[in-house]
Length: 464
Image (tube, rainbow, N blue to C red; front, side, top):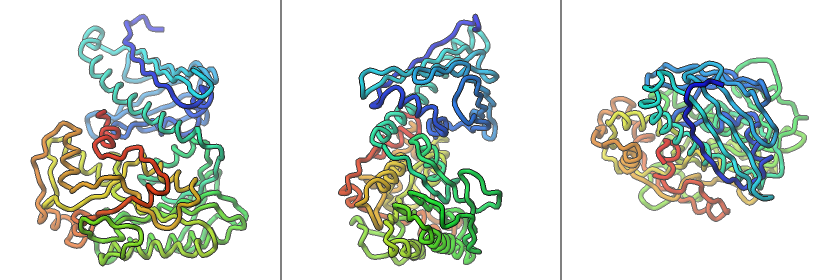
């Protein structure tokens, strides 16, 4: 142990499960990724297959400079199952670093999880005087986030008695990347359905929906199938070629996956297929419900055809849930990532006149609704996955700036956006107004983790 004077930071929470359950969650594959904060995500370069004494992890820590990061190698020198494990720095940014994860039962239904960090900074007394306050502030944001995630997941885990085998397409996208560590830490097995060619291996299957080939055979068993495929509508200008890709990537993939599902000798319990509130087109202030008419936009037609492509599964007697996502908020991608960067630079502002309404959902509630839809057999058909309140784009961006403590003074004129993205794309993705009701979701018994925008943003941006 280094004799350098160390700085200590501690974070303690009580969780609604036993110490053994909490420990096992931390030891599960994907726990590090699940606790990785979206406001300062680290890149996992090397990860052990299991948590044990002597195991090492190599990560890349972000820095204020774009495209640069600091490599940090950590090892687990001590590991006592059900009680504690310790990380120490092998090589990295600190002079020394020790992080002990402690687990202790409080009663038969509750335990205490305590993170104890002891570290020393380079540059001696200068590091302690000038660096320690910055590091402690960062640690406070990080561990507030981690302990919030821990408690949310323990609430889910305490009612989870059935490990599931889940087949998932689109697993590398924004939602899929969040779902995989969430599911694996809950004790489920995830098989990724990939388009890239490669050898069949544990946890990976392949498919080519354009040529209708797959490595899946009819004898395989999946409890749940989740389809998250589709070319990003906001990923490029809407040429005729791209518009056809946006449609076909959704309808053809869903149609072929439906064929795969109905060919299985053992049917899955449920098929969850991504969809979007864009099916309603541009709306007025009256919230649309699931039986509202399809809008008259091109994107509305895409979503309508997308949902129809799953009919084969429901006609076979398998429960289908079409998850009509609102704007999914995560600083790792999508619209929020594009809004946060200029806001951090003090250049946030409304888009166009700022009046169009946005129905949104936090990533944590996306995970929650997916779990709810799997467990609740009464949830079927289309369901609007949106939070309780709607915001104008001006109100949304203003709230982001408020959370980041930045001004909101630089509107982007509509003409500029039309020139950048094209008239149709701008109209259907940036200026579209979507007023959507979540009544069906609420009536099914779902309870939101982040029902209000400011609280959701503070959590995911580390500004609690």
